[in-house]
Image (cartoon, rainbow, N blue to C red; front, side):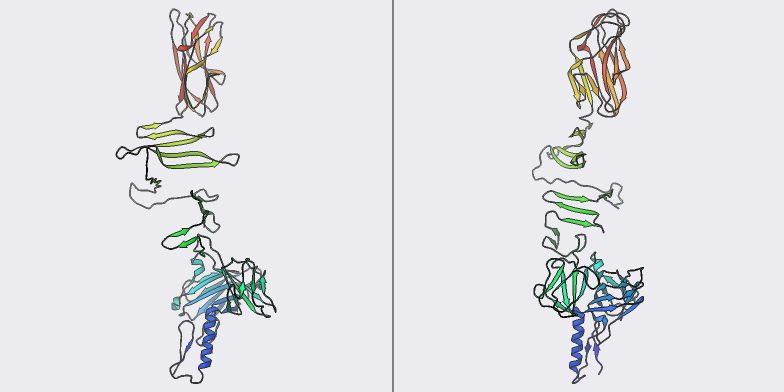
Length: 507
């Protein structure tokens, strides 16, 4: 009767009553196949542009190796076809080929049928799965599916009595690994870490028993994955119903060059960084509803709410010229009344003024107020006597002062604009001695120069308070003041208590 064979690796299954007296040979071959399938490492030399990797029933063949190390000098990419195309296969692939000319290095392309292929670049390693689906069979990179190359293979040919393997291997690659993330084989036999060898420093592997001449030592150094990929688990990382990172300062790196990171700040929160990219966070929504769109929810869930609680804040921050962080602006929502049914709130926009964060705009249900919008007003006290043609005095308005923003100087009686804008100005004065025709006038001065006459007193028989208003544009740093000018030689007294100088920023 005819023997049959296992589907994927071709182990011979003699028919009942067959091979009397020959079972030993068949059994030994099957054991060799099993050994090769479990942990065998095959070095396969490639040339040209194609190669067939065959698994032959009942015969030790290259397609039975678990680890395939491709060598040889290539002048172009080489396509390795797994045959037959109806066997499921799982291979560890290493591309250790060299460049036969000067245009490489070249890749090894793994295929099985007309389906997907996997490309293993020179000097790289991967884990591939062939689905054995017949003519349309496909190959999948398990290393790529979990986001990163799976491992690096280092191959050493031992000298007699050698125990320490370090530095460059037979392919001139320098050994590097993460302790605990490797396994080692000697002549195809898997060694046990801590018993057959030690590997703790990341750069060398030391055998317990010395190797003999020409022994082949293979070191498989598995990569430690960044958190953005499926990763080798550590004590502070777990995946169950929840994804957990339990170490303070944990970082999630995203992107090929980790250009976007999410960093845990212990006991504070998380920081999202996008390096030099202009867009850090973008929220998209494909909801077609007319009233829908992307939303940001700041939700305070305090168990003991109270009036004047802040329910959310957005902070804008930068660096000063001393490399110190400072808040440039802040948008805050404050619950003024948290009583059920009578809730009340306000929205506050604050900016930095002379190093202090100050609310500039407050929005409530009643409208918009600007608590720090520049405004001033002041009256004088006492009186001043004027005589002589074209003489003038600065109105000494220093009492009943209102000064929002701190821009009115009560020693120079000048208002200095804190910002560019359009300003409303009002002024008044009153002489208490009859000046006669062409008497005193008041002028608005800007930066020390006359700008506009805002009222003149022509009365010759009574006291009159003269008022003038003006709207003007000021740049930040411009200053204005009220002056009284005498147009004739009469002597008269100005009642400062009836004078006024004030105004405010319009916009």
